[in-house]
Image (cartoon, rainbow, N blue to C red; front, side):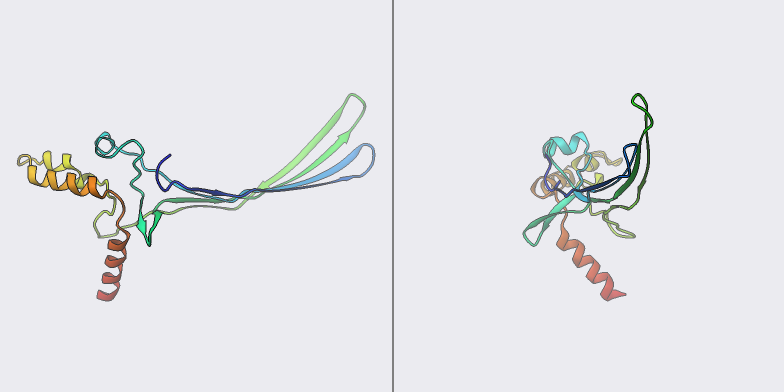
Length: 170
């Protein structure tokens, strides 16, 4: 289990059959199972070492609740029509036609022209400052360590403020 990886699903099933005679019947079946789930992030070993194996960078607090930035939504009903034919005592034929349709959706943060909002973005981790080609920047590595270990979740207020500022500026 990782934080903010909720799973919200329902299922509906309906089936009706019409027996035409001793040899033939028709069956119509429908299945609908809409669901939403919060996704979890793949992480580097450095991130696991700084946080733990259950760390999920895709969420942050908003209005006192955990909000996941990556949600998968599926709504795909299935409709089936079945024909049963008892040809003889030893032979039967079952023919089916099915149709599946619907929507799949995924959400994620976009940041065109802005800074990456991911709390585990590689430039915000200690190793990035330690790997500076001009020599290790220990002060920046320590600041990155502090920021990530004390926070490490999406800052929704910062994102909203940046969007408001951009909208006001035009």
